Length: 337
Picture 1 (cartoon, rainbow, N blue to C red):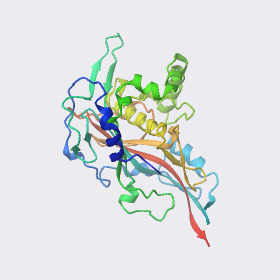
Picture 2 (cartoon, rainbow, N blue to C red):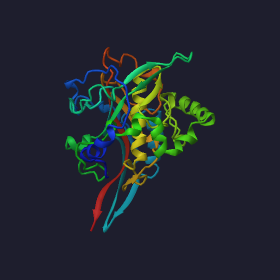
Picture 3 (cartoon, rainbow, N blue to C red):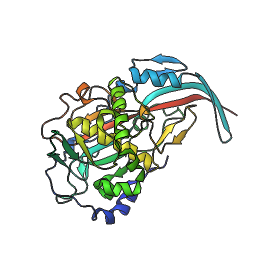
Picture 4 (cartoon, rainbow, N blue to C red):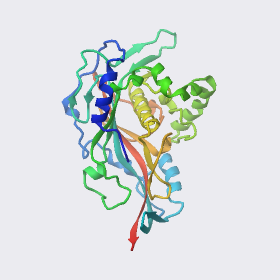
């Protein structure tokens, strides 16, 4: 799977970053104690349920049961890759493969515990109140997307053919993307956003929000993120009432953007390969909050904050980090000569 390297992003974006217009605002301090530790920061019970040949192992939730029904429909599998052919048993599980930072301090790489881009007050995140009588607020923050194949980092399950062999890397930082700083610029390169900015599309998201509260995801409504808002416009500002819920909304929007950039893949239904995903399948992802407070559970896209965000926003800490669990379907078997 090809991803944008941090070197290419910085090289391409260094000239463009100066074009982004932003006003100085107070931002949370970039702390050094957020360095990623896959053993202590990952909520390991989120890998369940695991299904092996149609037999389920471990606890599950409504979202897990729905997906495992898909992956266990045919417990046996057969794959071919080039001249290699193998039979096996279909295995499915949730794999911690990616991380997402949502930061109000530009260049604050939480997984590295370092600020790599002092901006002198530009491109800062902010929280603002909107004087429209609705008592709503608006948040702006930057997003960092990391390749973090935890199984590979811990040297576990490396014999499974569907475990990614990539190393830890930074795939994207939005500080160098003018389109993340401005929804208007984003609409220029993603004109389909106009189609989903109408009342009819907004009303459809009400059904998605109700489903998300029940632990379900409506994949055809890809422009909706349940109670977290909408995927469009693909920019760093979002309306919110709950800060933690807004962080999750921006993290999910970042995942959606990676698909629109052609840098998102999922395991195929037969478990034989990874396929490109220009438009995400929401039910293939779960989010776990790691910073500023470690979450006790993984949540499906759009789950209302009232059900999981309590006591997750530490005072004075407005930077957040999420682990992204992807639903992996794998044909684990033995190759034939």
